[in-house]
Image 1 (tube, rainbow, N blue to C red):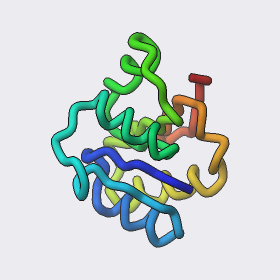
Image 2 (cartoon, helix red, strand yellow):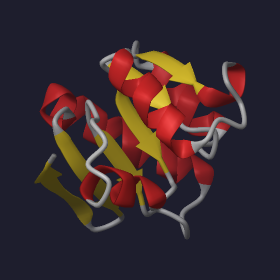
Image 3 (cartoon, rainbow, N blue to C red):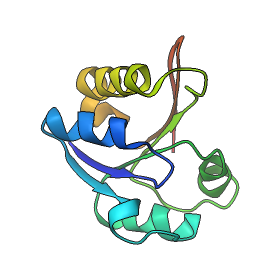
Image 4 (tube, helix red, strand yellow):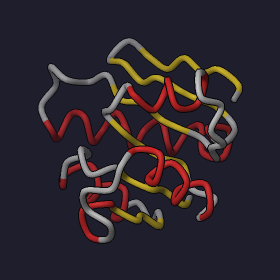
Length: 116
């Protein structure tokens, strides 16, 4: 799967996704410091799922109606980085392309998604 990782996604998550064979573009290695609308547009142009810890992307998608290929918003703050990586990899593995076209929120309790 093609993934665009926001700069707030930790190295552990990015490495784990790469190890599972996903194509990952990480803002840290490309356009660090980009404003959120630019990050969303870059992910859209790459037809990639944006993975972020930043709730502002919900406002950009739903209130400002900016286009998106799909967003996976992580609400895993109280988990260690290795456990976060396991949750993210598991959901990407099981849901895959079904995450595209949705704004999804991943919590320790599961996944909820809304069409965008």
